[in-house]
Image (cartoon, rainbow, N blue to C red; front, side, top):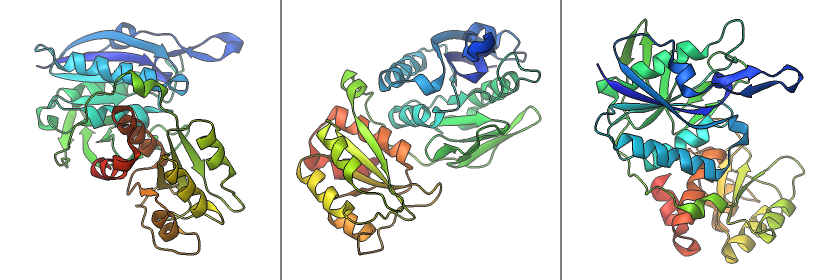
Length: 322
């Protein structure tokens, strides 16, 4: 029997209809866990109660701090974080970057509100508790458990707005077979970053998307507006049109790092093409995100720059953790 703490942050799993105002996160973690059955000891407390589309970087930092404090308790064997699906991939990835405990941290949520005719939250939460209590997932880092599948936070993305199983990507490390957690893979060792300090709250890392006819005007505007870094979500394996390579050179020359990612859901960024493509962007100073999608690349950039704003060392640090 394991001792699991559930930390609530809100999201659809905690939401109920408020008439014409729509569904709003309202239920606390104690309410969510009240119906759990099984052999594990489950305690609950709230960090936030809000929709994940409203979260700020400060909120993400607070969640990370609270999770780490909970993991340090001797009487806690694992942690479950209930969270909205909209931005779960960002919060879970931040926690994975700083996770230095063997104890499992499992994110879960729901696609249907708590007061719907067939809420999926209770089942997802029960599965997440089972995952957090699984000894064979100790050392696996931070994972997302949803609709019977348990996958690494790194690389995970929400790929469907309404499907019962909305996440893909990352590596599936386990799945549920009835009440049993079946472990199928195990992530390799990771370097943990320090928890970000309050400087993280005000980090401005903007995402600019490439598309036919796009110009680098927004990139330059972001830098002029005080952005600490820019993520360029290029086309394909990391490309952009006329003028982007020159803009990358300008921004990096002025101490604003540019990270080259891709708007394509899956696959690595591989600078290959000239004539303004990825080869030229990398030559101009863009740091390649490898397999990180734009949203997780943004989180990593914010963590690194909050700890050390030196643009001269940023590329090496980003590559080390990406």
